[in-house]
Length: 123
Image 1: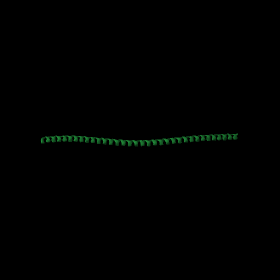
Image 2 (image 1 turned 30 degrees about the vertical axis):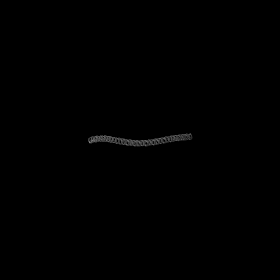
Image 3 (image 1 turned 90 degrees about the horizontal axis):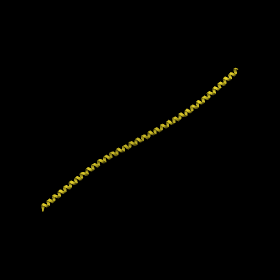
Image 4 (image 1 turned 120 degrees about the vertical axis):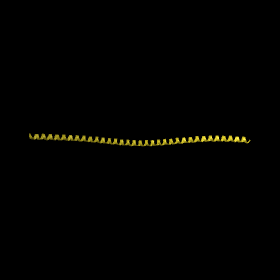
């Protein structure tokens, strides 16, 4: 009887041991699945960081391009203002030249009249 109870206790202990081993194996599988999942998340985060850095680089390049374009526009505006100023100066010089030309024509006309008058007096 005591041998039977010992054998029963031994069988129960073996059964508990097998159950614990089975539970440990399940837990190990779950841990491995979690490790894989975490590794996948880390890979995704790394990829997101790389994409964000690439976006920052692209934005910086775009900003530099915009700054260059703005500088070019400012240079063009300054050139346009200088051309407008030169044009105004040329127009003023032209008006002055026309005025002098008319003045000279008037003087020449007066001189001719005076010469005619002198000829008239001489004859």
